[in-house]
Image (cartoon, rainbow, N blue to C red; front, side, top):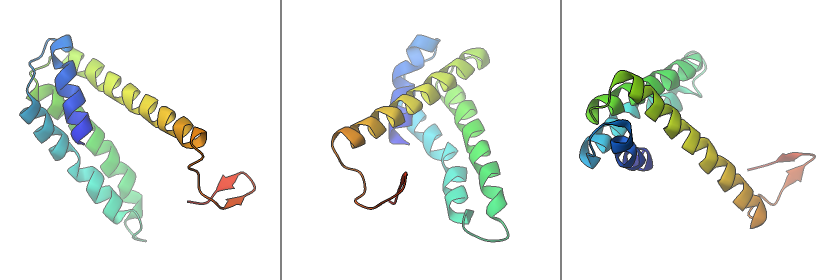
Length: 116
């Protein structure tokens, strides 16, 4: 979440907002509370279905809170959120490729499935 707040504050000026690292970190932390709750209730048998709802709520909170904290207009806030999610996907893809490149994968393999 710290990376999300830092990256959003760096991009704020490009989206006609103001650069405020403290506000971006606070918005990222508040938006992450439902995601943490989703991780906590994911394994519970009766309310595990509620985890995807909490994750969606967390994404919507991040979009709204980051736009509000950095004083970005609503339309520009949607673009900022799209850029942040795109950057997340790129980081995941690069990390996955580096893991394979450095041979840091798990030692046990069953067919095509790596056991973590």
